[in-house]
Length: 132
Image 1: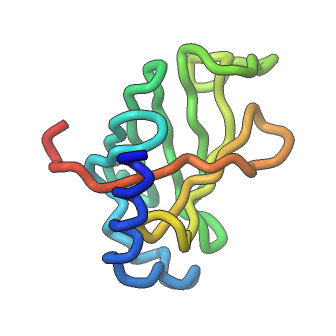
Image 2 (image 1 turned 135 degrees about the horizontal axis):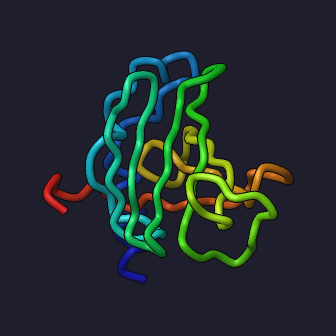
C-alpha cells in the first residue's frame, strides 16, 4: 500500500512523459530506482543502458531501436524456464521501456524467453539516491 501511494504521488508530481520521437535524448532513466523487482541500477552504455536489480540476481540491457528502448532481462530463477540459455541463464525474457501514465514517466514491459507477448509490467516506483 505504501508503494502504491508513493507511486501515485510521484506520478502526479512528475512532468508529462516524453513523446516517442524524443526517446533518443532521454537522460532520466539512468541511476537508482525502487521497483517491483527490488532496487534497480541502470547505467548508460552507448546506445542504451545496462543494469542490475536485487530480485534473483537480475540483470538487463536495453538498446535504442525504432523509437523505443528494447532489450533483455535475465535472472538466476524465474517462473518460466527457457529452452535456450541467454545472458548466462535459462531464466530470461524481452524488455521494452516505454511511456506511462501510471508511473514516473515510463514503464518497463516484459515477457518470458524470446517468444510470446511482452505484456507484463515492471513497476518503477521512485528514484533513489544514487548510492544503492
